[in-house]
Image 1 (cartoon, rainbow, N blue to C red):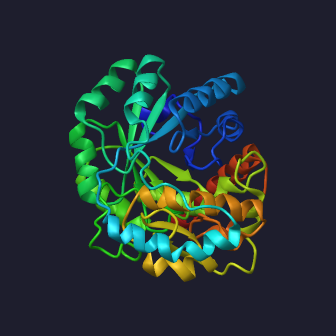
Image 2: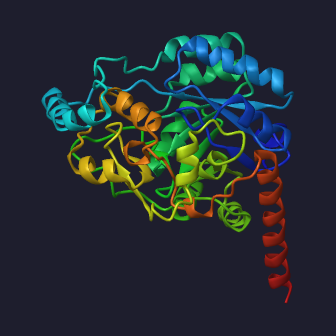
Length: 359
């Protein structure tokens, strides 16, 4: 990897920060100790909970790691559309015997308080999703020695990250599981079908900016990693591949669903959060996805109780089963072993390419 990453991990593999519980300290530590870069997800957590997870992770590994923050969100929601969706979900609330959530929750995810903690007690890497921090914020992290990474889904977003002073960009292709990290969610756009494939986006961003690229989106095998690195990425970020590992904090139902023949594919949907996110197509997405408004994080708060109740009831048809397009290739291994397997596959793919070029 280029010098900006050379001291972080021996291998060009980053474990994606998956908000909602999967990216726990145990997972991040296992990835770090295997030579990758583990990440904690601060999204949806209180500042105190974030701090406690960092403390736990530091007790589990001496290796560098990262923390991901959600950017504050502008209010784009149409209150009347949110209320219509609330009415539509009344049957779900009755079925799971749980009330729908309050949509008046904070839209800034305690961003400023989390910044204060990370600037006061720096970690090696901080990444940002759903927007780009100001130059002042990125400069402040630079002074502490923290490397900064901004998630981008387009050339324009990558250029904004470079202009603001980010050290690297995480280029997220349309294949990625979970939320699309777009900086602005246009409520007038459908938001569930548009996007650029990872290899094309790497090429576009590489020609537009001078920042190192971390490639994310559907990567599950070492051969795919080799392709992303050959296309110009400095490292790769994998989420779905690590979601099913032994150390992952993801719900057991979520883990099993990745390779369950019942779930035949993924889809981008606003059904659970109001923002486009890729998950396994289940009953909830089929019934409610077409009607969900662009209203993040209001819809996230609205459906939080339903998702929890579905998990408690053992019903994956009501859960947000975030997954990338490569979910069927998931391997239920310890995270450290998965890193070793991926590196072996990467080296084999590189050797094959070298041999082919020599003949």
